[in-house]
Image 1 (cartoon, rainbow, N blue to C red):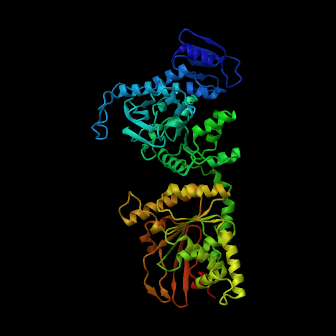
Image 2: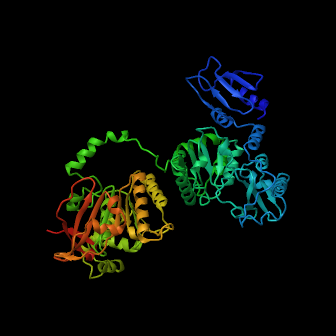
Amino acid sequence: MNPEKTFELFSRHIKQIKRHENNHAIGLCPFHDDRNPSFSVDLTTGKWKCHSTSCGKSGGLLAFSREVGERLPDEIYREFIDEIGLKPKSRIVHRGDKEESTWNEDGDILERVERYRKRLYEDDKLQEYWKRRGISPETLSSLFVGYDDKSKAYTIPHLAENREIVAIKRIYSSNPHNYSWEGSKRGYLYLGGIIKALDPGDSLIITEGEKDTLSLLDERILNVVGSPSSEGFKDDPSVFDGVRDIFILFDNDESGRDGALKVAKKIGYRSRVVNWRRYEELIGEELPRGFDLTDLRLKCQREGKSFRDELKKLMKLSERVVSLPIESLSPFIENLPEFLKRRFSGELIGYSTGLVGLDRITRGIHDLTVLGGEPKAGKSLLALLIAIENSLKGVPVVSFDFENSIESLLLRILSNRSELSEGKLAKALEDQNSPEFSPEEFGNYQKGMTDLRKITERFFVKKDRDLDKWKIIEVIQYIRESFGETPLVIIDSLQKLPWRPDKSLRRDNIDGWIRDIEEIRDKTKATILVVSELKRPQKGGNGYSRPSLDSFKESGDIEYSGDLLLGIWKDESIDGGVNIQVIESRHFIPEKEPLRMRRIPEYWGLYESI
C-alpha cells in the first residue's frame, strides 16, 4: 500500500495521529474514549490495532473503512485489488481438461482480456449498460471487465486462486439476460481472492453473480464475492476459514432463495440467508420480483438514502438456516416444569386429531409422528381429517401430497363437512333446486361450503415432485413468516417422495428421506406427520393383525426416528371397521388395546365405534 495515501485516510479519523520513520503511526483510538494514544497502524499494510484493554479492536483497511463509514479512496482501492491477486497473470496453464484445451486459440488470453477492457473503457456508448446500473468505468477497468466486438458481448474474466484466468463470462448486449461461458466456471467464486485479504473474524457477502459484486465494489464495499452458480459452488467450507459470518444476499425471487439455501447448506452454520420479505415489512413497501442489490443501490440513490445503511439493515434481517454444530441446553431448563406437567397429566402435547379417543391415546400429533398401515387402510383419510380439524381452528397446515389431485381433495373436504356423498354434491353443484336435493341437504351443503372456504385459508397443498429438504424448509419458513406460526406438516406418503439422485435402492432412498425429515423437524421445530406404507399384515381374528415395530422396518429406519408411531389396520368384525393404536412413543407408555373406529365412505368420515 502507498503509505502516503494510507496515512491520509487514517488521519481523517484519528486524532493526534503522529507518523514515525518506520511507516507506523500512533494516535487516539476513535472507537472508545481514548486519552492516551493507544491506536497504531502499519501504513504499508493498513493493519491497525487498539492496544487499550477496554477496546482491543483491530483489523485492516476493509474493517476500518466499514467502522468509520468511509469508502476507500480510488488509489488505495486499486492497490488493494492488485495486491490481493485480482490482477490476472499473463498466460493460462492448461490442465488437460477437454473444455479448456481449445479455448486459447485466439492468442494469449491476457492480451484478449486487455483488448476487451480497453474497448469498453474507450467507448462511452458501450459503458451505458453499466452506468445504468451505477457501476463506474474505473471499477470495471480495475477488474478487467470489457467488450468483445466479435461476439457483441460484455466480458467478465474469472480467476483461479493462483490468478490464472480460467473463464470468461460473456453477457450479450442484445439481451443482457442471455450469457455464455468461455472456459470453465466450475467451483470458482467470482473475485474469490478477496477472501484471503479479510481479517480474521471478518464477515463476507456472497452475491448472486458478478453484477451485484461489481456494484458493491463500486461502493468500495470490498468484503464481497460472487457466486456464478449454486450448482457449481464448491462443497468445501474450508475456503472460508477465518470468516465469522457469511451473508448470502441473492435476488428476491424463488430461484434466488432456492440457490441461497443450497449455498448455505454447503457453507454450513456460518451462513445467513437474505430475507427480502422481512426487509419489505421493515420499509413498508413491496419490492419487485427479482429485485437485487444493484436495484437496492439505485433505489437508495434515487431516494437520497445511504446504501450502506440499507445494506446493514438487510444483513441484520438475514436468517441462519443451518444449525449450529452444538446447541446449549440452558435455554430448555425453564421449559422443563411445563414439559413434565404435560407429559404426565394426560394433556395434549401436540395438535388435536379432532377425535376424542385418538387424542387420548396419542396426546395429539406431535414432533415426528408416523402413521403406518397397509394400502387402503385409511391412512390418507385420517391425515386429511387431521388437516381439516386444525385448519378450521386457524392453524396453518401444509400437505405434501403426491397422490390426490387438488380437485379430489377439495371435493372430499366438502363431502366431509356437509356430510353429503359426492353424488349428492354433483347434483347440488349442477342444480341446487333439484327435487333430489332436500332443504336440509341444501343447508348442509351451504355449511360445507362455508367450512371449505375457511379451511382453504389455512390449508396448503404442495404437489411439486422436484423436492428436497431445503425446499420443504423454505415452504415452512414462508408460511411461518406469512402467518406468524409454524405450520403442521403432512407428508403423504414417505414412499412417494421423489427419488434421490444419490440413491439406487428403494430402502436407501427412504432412509435418506428419513434423515432429511429429522433434520427438517430439528431445524424448523415443526410437527411433521408422515404417512407410510407398511408391509401387508397377515389376517387375524378381527381381520388384519396389529402392526408391530417389525412392520415399520420395510419403511427404512423410521422405527428409530419417529417420536410417535401409529398403526392403522382394518377391522372386519364391523362394517367399515378400522383399528388405530400407538405402537411406540418416546413420551409415554402406549395403551394396550387399540381404538376401534368406523369409516363412513359416503362422505369421507371416521368415527369412534360404540
